[in-house]
Length: 284
Image (tube, rainbow, N blue to C red; front, side):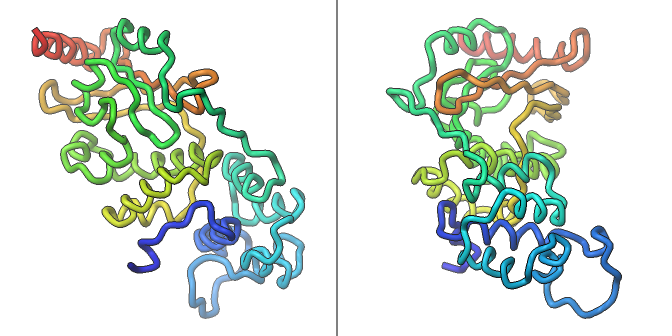
């Protein structure tokens, strides 16, 4: 098995992996360095990061090699500025060393048990709705959500479906763009529980099965999970432009309630209503 196919999550040097991945993505011109010179690797050199962050090159090397695992928050924030990290990525960087406390995943008495009230809500809400955990496993879904995408059903994993199921890929006209944010949000979602063996298995499976996932995972992008627009190309009702909302399920170990809705009176709203009628008829 090649090195690219051996993803490591809760490894001894997660900080070094993150720093190497992120400095490779920084254009030297973006941090004021003059063009020219031969660069064997993309992005910034270690010594350039160190100089711009105001630390010694030897100390920065120790950070990347995992020989110093207790840098101060001030040092990490200086490095974050050089690497042009946003607030979410900076927080993630600080969390890798304990410079800020990572949120501990709460462990309900029965892991991944969806609260009864939430199950009732998705059954009566009248919109495509489902519940997922930190790993993007679908824990519960209503009929309309499954009609929207067959991959949205209890027992499926949305990340696995997105990268390994051609039918799921065909639903999204902007698939190439959507997966970038999805992987970045996934990394943020699982950061609180990096030792989860199911997570390691999932990332290993996806890295072996999808070059796109392997490439995006290696970038170490981080994005806070959030709602947004979802454009779909449904085989039964045609194009849909929906709003996706993600709501935290309290005291659930990181579960999210996800719902889709369309602008009232829009063509997408009419198509979504038609999809609901077709789904209801199919169950009669």
